[in-house]
Image (cartoon, rainbow, N blue to C red; front, side):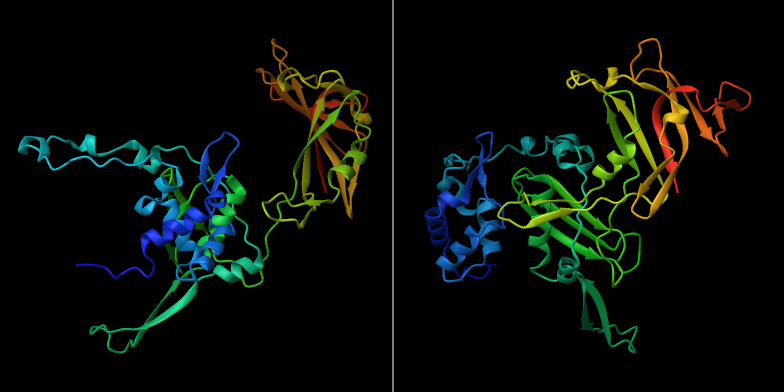
Length: 375
């Protein structure tokens, strides 16, 4: 049985790709040559050169998969020398492979190193790739009253390039993900499951959408709950000024390839609580390891009692004190205890080595590693 005849001969495609060789092949910082990503404009130019008889996605897949010796023609792979393989194996050689010989841990995703990342689609992108309902006529004799059935699929030709673009933005890897399937589950723990595999390094790709977004959903922002504060004078009086600078809006030019848009970063603080880690560095100790960094010792009354961010007021609730071990390293085995602020200027030391809380004065000096504020 033979398949349908191709609309464009393979050699014609290869000749067209060779004409654009300088743009089809890119070189990374290590000097390794690879085929450019599918979103590059060169694929559209080659498609137009062929009068649109083959799409840009098909061209990219043709080259990335190395079909019909195109990579050899581009010089990415050495020329293949055909050898005579007509010799028949002996019968005892045909069945000498065991199950362990036929399985390779490199083909099993459970044995491969994993990299996890999150794609955030804009409302317009989700509108472009969200599942669509397909209705077809049912012919189930056991259910004559049911004339049609339906299922959901991702729109053809729109979701694969978008996923590939987000993959490149998050990883900058020259992988060519060939998406095998995408299933939509209207009921279950997962809403969408996408399976793919890189045709170059054979890495596996699995993407999931856990639940269906609501109709008016927008990309969510994760509020900041943890901040590292660095001081060089053993004082944290300017903590409010640091919060103002840390949470200021920043605007810069987008660093994504072929994009000159302005990217705006607007941090937001949690409306419940914030934890601030105190780091002490001398001006001449910027190259020291954080393990040997000093811990500042301050009086409880010298810690800012209130922090203000927009219309939110955070009050100091407690200080985490750390008693270092014999090695005096920040990561050494030591003991933590907490100074909790009570009404007025009263403080209590909570120590699991003591049977009950111990009252403390506001002029008590503590080795301050974390300060905790809440609304």
